[in-house]
Image 1: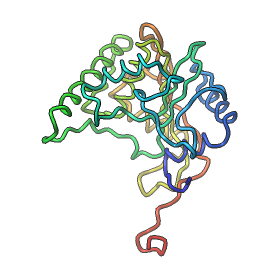
Image 2: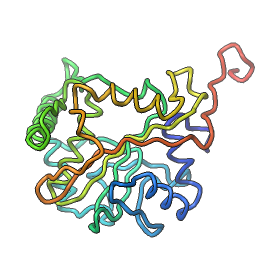
Image 3: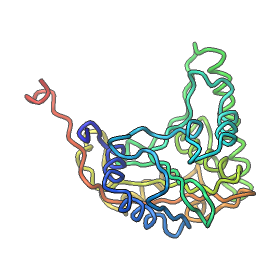
Length: 261
């Protein structure tokens, strides 16, 4: 099963699949000084290659979020739920943050091509329900932008540019506004030469930091990351971290090789 995955998805599963104690300890160390402590008894998704499903905040079990918060998030993001989607998280962990139960949300990247700058697209012939959902998502992100811009001026998240980054920031803010302390981690996996066919992998910490800072420039103010932001009843914080890959991704066989037959 490990051979089915490449890039950041593979590296998340490799990391989790070792054992619970080692994963909890290494994630706690990675999150310092963000105030989060992960224990082996805590809950996370995915759980490794045996349960690789990614998390959606509106579909989590009660160990992660209450039914009220899940429903509130869904209503905030969507008008029509059937057939619609909310963002998937590469890794989600319910743990202690500053002595309270909170969530760690991880967006993982292994090469430059995974950092998307596009806005959310809407085809011309979509249904009225899709258009209403598109509008609602824009309103939700704008609500988050206005609130965060009051805390730290210069926040320019938007549905129409850097949508992936914008929706991650918006959901972290919304959770904190609902009294759920939240740590959002942009995690760069270093040294995956196996995915060079897709885009330049991150060679080292310096390469990752330069790339992610450039990617976020113009969307988030320079002082946005690495500090807790008081969102009223709880804090959110953005951490930028990296770790070496455990194993590089399998290379795709070339079209003219025997492996591709």
